[in-house]
Each structure stands twice: as structure tokens, then as C-alpha cells.
Image 1 (cartoon, each protein chain N blue to C red):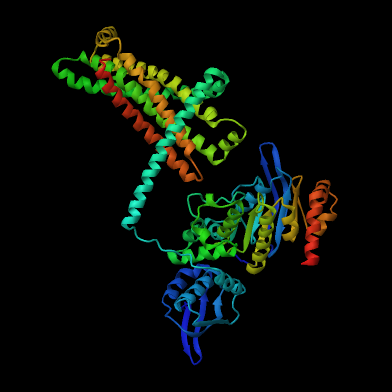
Image 2 (image 1 turned 120 degrees about the vertical axis):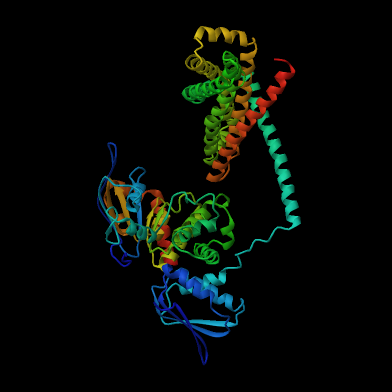
Length: 374
Length: 264
């Protein structure tokens, strides 16, 4: 194969012979040769006679390179001979039109870093305000619903109760059952060394009712429904559906956010009760099989172990977790703007943040319950 | 390899497409010759986009054959298919620019995929394609969400041109544009068509675009295609075609096109 470029010195200037394949397919090799072209001045004749199937992109790369080699000065007089491609004229015209666009990123200086920090701080501030405004909007709608019950959108709430609650029952039950089996199993192994097998019942019932039932349910729901809320509302944002609602005089917070929040507030305690029951069942089953504690003995011990508040200490957290999950999901959904990537990013943020908030809230509850001896 | 000078460029024979009981195409024939701008029109739901998707191989037709450059699209080996895809450019109705990439990166996308080029050359080529469609190289740094409707259509065209295709498919290129942008797009298309010697297949409802740019028109009626020159279409007696080409909007567009020819 012949080299695509051959530069010759002639009496009246330079001659650049173009030969071989000059189509787009050959551009990578042409590009390498163009980089080796020395700085030129005077006149240059480009001979296209032997160039086969010349493509637009290689021709453009050639023109750009020739313009560069003479440092942008009109010191090089370029002419084209030998049946140059028909689009060369168009390219030359475009080349004159263009102005420097290929900018190099400047390295970060201290000034820029400080600026970045400042922008970040302002952004966080705005963000905090956004959350408070969002809370306020939800509170307004709920407040209004006291005067105007149709603001509650019962059909929408029902749909979300079904989607976030009823359809979550199998997975919540299964996970609560399995986790409590694991806890009981581990507990049994340790406690049987002291001959204190019966305390497995205390361990399982207190752990499930106070903490694990509600926490597991909340985490599963955050993964299932928090992401669904963010994605659903996010796509509506991208399709300008929320703008359409606003333009028709409807409030997206009332239509999209509040039903989801309320549905989750209703559903999460119910799911927690189911998870509690399944957890106790799992503990009971393992005690029966592994420790040979018969069921009547298990329930009797359970009654002794539990104080009247144990069950409520778990359940009371559920509505709070529900509000956190639903608000984070819908808020992130409402933040989606412009691109599919934003949708993915904010959906991820929604799930991660809601799980984090749930666990943080759980920790605060734990401290609080110890303080008030609940 | 494909023969770029093969004529007709596109040949569709006896195309049938049905979804459930609904028959969209009932033995549709279509031929597109080298270097023409072929407009596809038809009422809503007559399967214009389905036809385009069948030609592009994005959809398997119920029966019938589609040939591009004399090669059957469906029975093609994967290797040939890749070179076929590189031989045409497509713009979609809403631009279909990748929203997480800048305009320049969108234009570079097919180049990056198929050729090992340096960053510098890639940016130069992005500049070239943006300049060709009348955008400024500065627009390359913007994201699709920052562009106006007309600019999105142009950027989509720039991306379609990146691999130097000889064949362009445009799906509603002027839909949603204001009349000034739309007619600027028509002019751009005519300009590129003559400068780059393109063959263009265009789905359009814009009568102005149809009269300004198309050399031949294919109308989808009753699952078939009737194709003819614009003059021929105007004399056609099919009731739908009559209504389409002799409605008040069509008359205005026709008059405007005629005026342009005599004065321009």
C-alpha cells in the first residue's frame, strides 16, 4: 500500500501528492501521516490525481492540518489540482467560517477551588431551602384537605396502597421470616452453651418487634417504592407532564406527591405487622425444630419476655419511616431535569438517601426510647 | 462491500406488516433512485414510521423483501449489516440525541465507535459536521437540553452525516419547527443534497417541505404506496390524494413553491 501523503520540494514551491485510499475508512492512517507534516511556507499544490474515493472527513483533516502548519498566517498558498473532490469548495468555505472552538481545559488554581467550594455551599443552602419548601407544600395540601376532602385523591391513594403495600407482602414476609430464623439460629448456638436455650425466645421476639420487623420492612419498601416514586415522577418531569398539570391549574404536589406519602403512611405500619408476625413465626419454627421448644412454651415465654410497649415501640416508627421514604423518593423525582442520566442518578440518590434516613431515624428513636424508658 | 452506485438504492417489494388483526402494509412496493429526495406521506396510522423501521431493519416485517443497494436486508450476514448501517444516516422524529452527551460528543459517537481517531481529529470532525448543518462549533459544548427545537433537528442531522453516508433517512425533519426554521432546514437539505450528492428519504407532513424539496413523493393509502412526481400527484384521482394535495394548505404551499421558482 502506498503512503497516503508524499511531500516533494519543487522549483516553484511544495507539492503534496495524495494517493491510495482517502475515504473515511483510511482516516486513522491518514491522520498519523498528517501529524508528521512539517511547517511549510510559500506555495503548496495538493495533487488529488491518485487519491481514491476521497471522503469529506479526511479532506477536512487535511485542510485543518495545512492551516495549522503555517501557524494560522496566510503564509502558505494552497492550491488543489488533479480533479479535487466536488465538496472541497464547500469545505474551504466552512473553514473560513469557523473560528477557534477547540478549547483546552485550564488546570485548577486555588482561586477556582475556592470558587468551587463556594458554589457547593450555595448549592447546599438552596437545596436545604428546597426541602423545606417541599415539606411546606405537602403540609399545605394536607391542611387544605381538612377543609376540602376531594384534595385527598382517594383513587390515587388506593392505587399506591396496592402497588406499594399489597404487592410487597410476599417479599416482606419472606425476608422477615428468613432473617428471624437466622437470628434465632445464631442465638441458639450461643445461648445453648450456657443452657439458656429458652432465652432465644426473648432474643427473637424483642429483636423482631422492636427493631427488625419495622427496619427490614422500611428498607425493602425504600428499595421497591422509593425508587419507583423517583423514577415515575422523574419521567413525568422529563415529558413535561408535571408542567402540563400546573398549566391546567392542578397542583403536582397534590396529585403526585401527597397520595404517595399518605399511601405509604397507611401501608408501612400494616406491612410491619405482617413482618412482625412472620418474624415470630420464623423464630417459633426454629425454636421448635432446633431447640425442641414446643409452641405453647414459646408463646408463654414470649408473654413473659415482652413488656406492653415492645410491639408499639416498633410500630410507632413505621409512619415516620414511611414519610421519610416517600418524601425523599418524590422529592428526588421532582428534581429530575433534562436528561435520562439525571433520572438514573436521582433514582439512585433517592434509594440511598431514604435507606440512610431510615437508619438514622431508627438510631434517634433508639436513643429517645432509652431516655423516656419506653 | 456494498456498491454505492447501485440503482435503485432502495427497493421494497410486497411488504406486509400487521399488528394483531390490524393490517398496516398490504403488499407495499417502493423504489428510491440515486440522488433523489423521496418524500413519504400518508395519514396518521398508515404506517410511515413502520415502513421506515422495516427499511432500517429495526422491525421484522410480516412478509415481503427490503433491498438496500441491491442487497436483501433481512438475509444479510452480521458483518455486512454493520457496513450497511454505516452507509446510511438516520434522524429520528425528536432528534434522539443522547441526553447525557454534549452535542459534539453526540456527533462523534458513531466515529468513535467505528474508527480509532485522536481526540483532536474527533473535535475537528464534530466542528465540520456542525458547520455543515449551519450550527456554530461553540454549540458543540452544549447539552441537548440546552438547544432549541430547530437546533436539535440540525444537531441530529449533523450526527447522521458524521459517517459520510450517501443515503439519509429523515423522520419528520421539520415537525415542530417555526416556518422560518423549517424553510431554513429545507434550504439546508437542498444544499447538502447537491453538495454531498445524497439520496434522501423523508417522512414529512410539512407540505411546504414537500413542495420545496422533494423530487418524488410516495403516498401510503390502503396499505399500498402510490409514488409519482409532484406534478403527477396533483393529477392523481384517488380521493385521499386529491384531498391531501388540493386542500387549502396544499394550495398555499404549491403556490409558494411556484412563486419561488419563477422569482428565484
